[in-house]
Length: 346
Image (cartoon, rainbow, N blue to C red; front, side, top):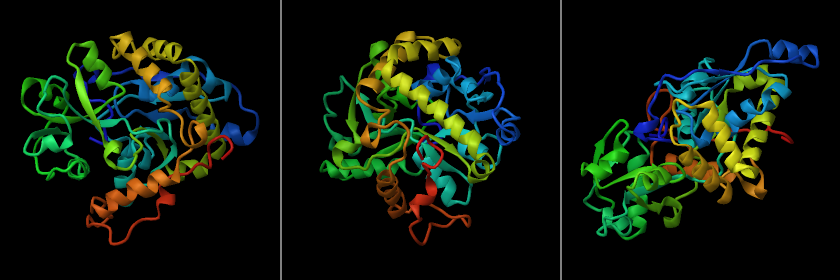
């Protein structure tokens, strides 16, 4: 789920996309020229949606071109962005905090370089019409439609227990139909993305009720991040800074002009975003509820406290394994899992 959990709506499950290439322009010095010969690539973690909005805005409005960059957006595939980045198959990727934690703990060269979304988007979702499920403790003994990642069970158990329940429930693992399973009776609850699936549920007349993880003391986690590798960053520092500056500018535009940003996202992805209302309402929610803004109201910088708290949860739950496949014997230095050095002002 953390690899591609970001969006699980069947309507978005399309793996054949056209890579978007932004034409390049001249660089200012020889170092930049040597770095920018090849297009900068970024791998998506799912089909295009508002988590990626700043990237497509930067492409559509020429922010990358203005930095002298050619950018290639790699469509979603079955390989995790963390794997593509660590193997040098992509320069950047869109992922999430848990994905980075798992990958880096096991020895992969990947780290967070930007917080494109600063707040948790995940929540426990049930049918709004199901009056028997009014809070997490009511999920005891019920059936959860999950995605097979190791953190799901401990997260749900934490929240249910925090609400006074036992944290014991049944789990069925589905690939991409967990959202629909709640409606067809296969499951009672799932983990959904409030900023997309919640809106989509309303639009199709199947509203959901959500229990927010953070309302029950669970630590904030980055549900969407921009990631890269130390190898790429050290070899291409100027290019990385230019790419992130343009990307940050794209998300700032989405914060200031959400409806226009949604239109640009939809225009760039007509094959996968069929309902412009979904993109617009999602963009408005993200902007109005400050999902882009982190500490100090800034867009982009990674908050060390989020890594410390959520990372500690993953470690204490024995969810992190080393290169030998065994649970880590000591808690990692979380400052190695992210960097703000390549952001403007970093």
